[in-house]
Length: 280
Ligand code: GRG
Picture 1 (cartoon, helix red, strand yellow):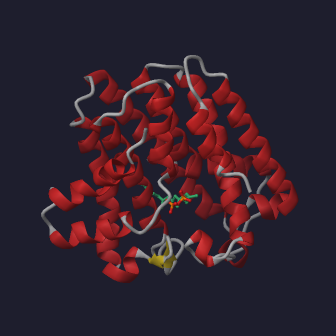
Picture 2 (tube, protein in one colour):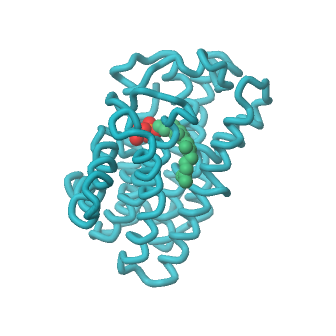
């Protein structure tokens, strides 16, 4: 069973106990404790358990590293130079509380500390190298950063659906695929198949995010809704319309469920529950 308190300890403990620059630790903690859903680390731990692994501290630390990069990307995404958002996870954005310079540096810390955490996790060296390679490729210029740049470049332009898919596979998809790939690396199981399932889940997640931007209120998404339309962002909803976007979401979630159920020596029950929570 996933121990959620242990996960929170891994996510926050390093900044509480080991980072001695007080205002840096405080700023990072502010964003880490702002109420994220933790879907990426929870998916990772649930997949490991599905393969029958007993969860150890090292697993919780890799889970924390995933959440760190994700949270760092949100801090940077909210900056005035990017989306210029005042609210995130229902609270003021990091730069609104700590100022832009510390917000940039807090994001930087959250992008770099994962490599220290994983390198000192105690996993066999080859496993560590594989995890680090995949995490860098998921978040850096081969992944999320590339997606963010393409997204910025395409603002206000009309692009085809395939382009939008590619963009989101990089920007959102790679960090949602990493939990699947990392769990496969650690469990020594079907990494290619897991990667494919992760890509589909990442796509579903972005479609859901686009739908929620037009259907949800501030309380349920923790950020200002309707910003995509306001900024003329190209989204699944603007390209396909709400109804077709919903169908596309459901199609991708069904594909994920089929993929999970086809994995060998895997109990998909808990991961399926997480996937079902994404249905709208
Ligand atoms: C990784 C070095 C590095 C830089 C990041 C700013 C940037 C470059 C990328 C932006 C990526 C971004 C903001 C993608 C959107 C992802 C997304 C759908 C976020 C919402 O995820 P949830 O719903 O949020 O899991 P919570 O708050 O629950 O964690």
